[in-house]
Image (tube, rainbow, N blue to C red; front, top):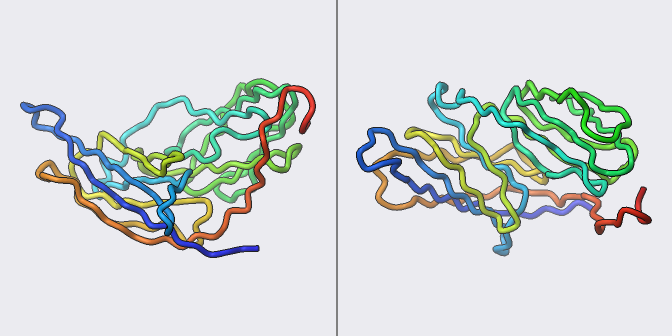
Length: 223
């Protein structure tokens, strides 16, 4: 049964100076995501889109991995920049068949153990849902963005996005259980702030019907 709920997002912008004698400065975006009862929301993607296109084109050359351990995708949610190559190593002793039918990126990696030699290139912005043809409960999300400034909330519902150049940003949040498109709030990050700013906005969320299970040992349990 689907149920509706809301969670609110507290955004705190803290401006940090990179050096007392430096002419350039950077900002840190601190975000706390909680539900209507004050409980932290995990696996929410928070990202900042700069008004200046040149800032958003900053490259992020990082080896990205979505692992498969104990018949689960790890991490469950991962944001990446457009053009990122993602590797899918399988550290289980059973074969997996990774696939996605999402319009943003359709692909499949047939039955395998170990690490495929070729990564999957996520070349368009959007959401990609992952699955395994062998283990139906396995699922994960790849959120492809055109900005390099993003983070995922942990169990405490908090994130920090650092090294933000001064300027105007459209701060947005996405969650796999959101009923609507990503919500946003514009914030000006400058080097003249004397105290953190706070902002609150509400997002409609539907209950996530994810099948959870306890970890299993290397023998017995799920295959």
